[in-house]
Image (cartoon, rainbow, N blue to C red; front, side, top):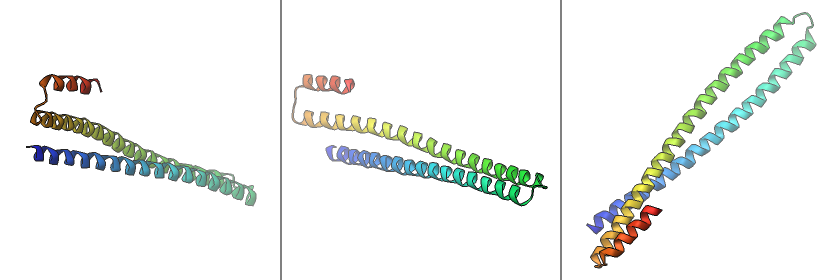
Length: 141
């Protein structure tokens, strides 16, 4: 039974490690999306300014043309921002789910470790009073 419990504990440790790795990966993805959004925003601003000044500089007569081009550019940029916000929200949800899973895994791991310690203590014929004190200490943590 002790070997089985040790194997199960090892599985939980590996699951916690995987959860931690997933959180790091999702965090990196979120950072990349934020960087991409900032880059696209600045690029959009620069493009809008260049287009605006170029159009105004080359043709004072056609004030509708630059305005239409700027409006279309604004629509495209707004749609891209919406898509990025949706993607960021999805990553945030994945991170939140991952954190919850890791917390659950950590709690289960603590329970497994406690049960393993209890089994070892029983095998070593420790006084049951000492085990009760350990349970109180674990509950306080």
